[in-house]
Image 1: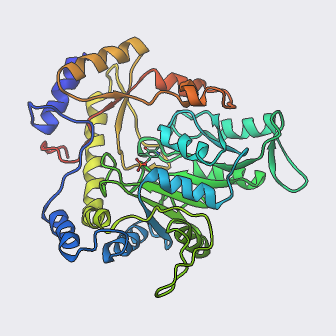
Image 2 (image 1 turned 90 degrees about the vertical axis):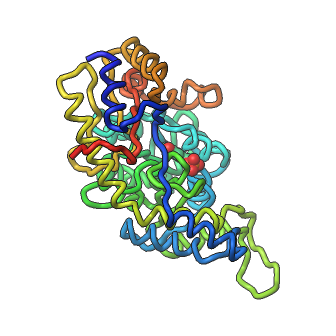
Image 3 (image 1 turned 180 degrees about the vertical axis):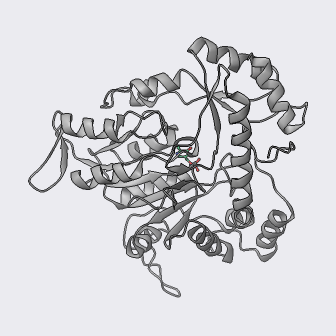
Length: 386
Ligand SMILES: *Cc1c(COP(=O)(O)O)cnc(C)c1O
């Protein structure tokens, strides 16, 4: 198979000779109606019926009670990590193979990310690599705090990220986190609709966050949700993300230094309309992945499939090329033909601001970073793929 076969395959799927993007949203009359309602009502900001409706809608979809809506996924991570006590001088374990927002949220709290490898099955945090890192480099203090021996810093949290929608091995990760007394915040920014052993990603850790940026599976324009195991935590996070204002009919009483992170009604309106189609979108995306999987079987391009224990939302479909050169040939050719493809993110420890971070062995991350190509994955394709 040559790069031109990939171009032709994608053009057949989308039945288009124009530019084909990697991932784009589709809006209909419901989106228009709900957004227009907010404009007509003047409730475009953080007070309005759609914000609570959106929180409830997401909570119902993921079968989880406690959802707090915020301005974006990065803010969701920032607030959740702040709530669990991550602060200056702490360490937070995550992947080098992630979008930069994961690390920015950690760093903005004055903490430092620590990079652990991913595994082949999920391209997400590897439990074995996690256990090895902790056994070799950390110890539990008398107070039950996990301390990184060489730096003397506390590991306050871990943030597994469900890469391209493929769930990490959460049972194993949870077992390790409990053994070491480390809280888990799932970065489920990309994986709304993905199931791990039948349960929604984002509901498995102490907290989980979802992004509703324009490139995600559904969008609010910009938006995020924090899911929390316990109602008290969700209430505290809502307080923290709404300037810590105590409820009162006219008095301005604030009791903490807090964030102004509440999702505006305008964004929530778009999200509510999108949420109505989410089940359909997940079905369409899974059907597209199945088609790609068949198309690329027995080719030089290995299609990235969901792990056995999971049902993925296949947010972004991915191919593994045979080498970096092979990858670059595919990227060059497809983009020159107006079919958008992208490599995986640069590994976080190769970015200047994270180059000094503590890290374990990252050979699997390096392997995939140099070989992966994401291919068009929008659900609005024309071909009857099933
Ligand atoms: C999109 C994304 C985020 C950030 O979400 P925003 O809503 O864009 O702030 C965080 N982590 C990962 C892995 C993402 O893909």
